[in-house]
Image (cartoon, helix red, strand yellow):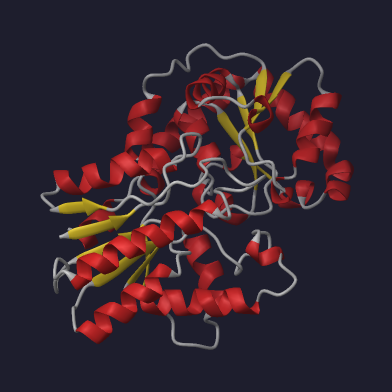
Length: 347
């Protein structure tokens, strides 16, 4: 049996797709799956965040309470596997506690998103991060298989937390976005407008101020800041499908779901040559600009004219870039937007 503890399914995030997709993928592979829901306190995300800092704990704690009851009732047995789709979950320590003291040999699998090991993450920006890093080390050691979408993310994690310690078991698996790929087939990306979209959270590490300055400097194009517009998921995909450019100046990106969605819709992901972007798009330099151009706002101002020239070239010669991103979708996207490696290890 595979027991899934899903991250809370927020409709405006891809987590709602994971909630449906991951168990379906495992059932298709012949697995017996039980998914444990948590209690929903508030389904609004904290400002600039991926989830709600308070309600996520209510959700996760209630999941662990249900799982503990299953252990107590003898419903969890040796050979079972537990998949936690957000590894920053202290309930993992409780699962480890129960399996060790009860002698029930279950495997713990978990997907990492971010943490204090990334200096640009919310946790990484805290004045005191030692407690968070100690927690992350304990979680990783308690997890039997730690999953990362990219080599960049895995290396950042290991270099920061385990440079002088025995490394935990890690696997680069891509992310389980199979349902996302199917959903995006329903959106027509054949008719493009002179539109540039900013798909990211309104958080400091996404550098919205650069996007806003570009908007002032390029009045001939339409600029869309998704979170400011409060778009539904359908509206967001429609705007993304008709845009020519998806812009990023991110200082933190362990995967880059917005740019992956853009790629599928033949919208050019214009990204800095750093973070996970440097890995994912390494064979397609046409969509990467030099990292120093947006390393901070001051550097951006020095290189602003260069960046504007690239944007205008994409706008004026979109079909040339479309060929590049279609090739990317064919050759590379499947490695990062699917999770066959994870499913195989679970099934």
